[in-house]
Picture 1 (cartoon, rainbow, N blue to C red):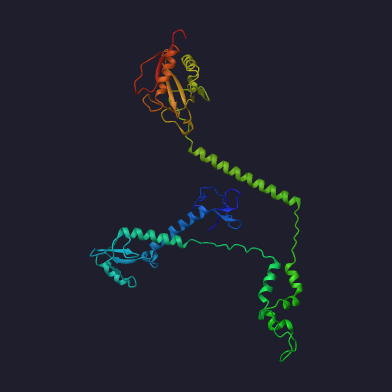
Picture 2: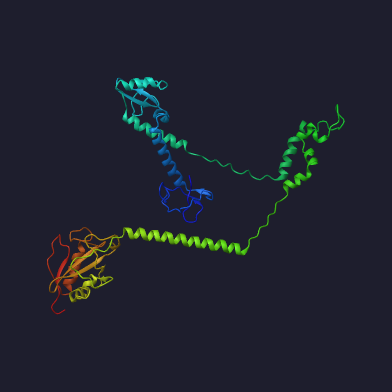
Length: 387
């Protein structure tokens, strides 16, 4: 299965089927990096293995010529008492935790078929437990443990030679068997005798050049042309910029698709653009609004737009908090308090007393405040005549 990179990383990720998103939630490039990936993402590997095992189990359940569920789960067929159901068991109890009375021969399918033809049925809890057991066994079998042996610690050459001398001294290995060239039925060369198996002198005499060649250091000198490096760097910068532009375009399209269009209010002509503090932009220049805003100076003020819905705010409007002034007929205004972009009632826990604070401020600044109920959503106040 091909792996894909996130950005320009060298980690290989597995993509969810039919998407360009990895199992670990990253946006992947379209071209695979199977040949150059230096590592595999662990969450992706585990999730892909789990999906693969699930698919294999579904295919095994549908196959008619493959192993049965009992074989895949490693259980046997069993009967409990005089019941009419056939159970699965992996020990003296069934998978549904009942004591086994008799086992059904699993080697002869005719025995099981005969029982099923007599009206017996498989136990449903046992079937579910066996499916889980088969899935767990398959998942455990899919585990691939790669054991890396630690590199052996370097041993000094002098220590090797000293150890070899201590082993050979005082033993028959240290003796040069047949050291005399003519001491035998026919003359032989000394390095070819049996002593060559146990003594290093034959190898040293035979191949001194090979020993020097084996231990000779290898020196490699490389150089790069400056124009080649510049060309590779320019191509990498261009690819990175193209990938960033494509990613930004997809993200902008996704955000535009999920952003609701502004709601049009029938019968209202919007003449103001942007935002206003303490009221909608359309009411920002009303004299009653200006006077009420001056009376409430110093309190938290809500920054509003003309299309802000105070009953069902959008995600972008839920950060708005503070008072909102709505002009009514004559010298009367309605002052609301917004939390998370939504108006609150006086009996709302935690934030309800904010309406009492607004009423107290207006009353102390000379405004006439109407009596509020527990369910009131705003403060009705009248502008002073001399204001």
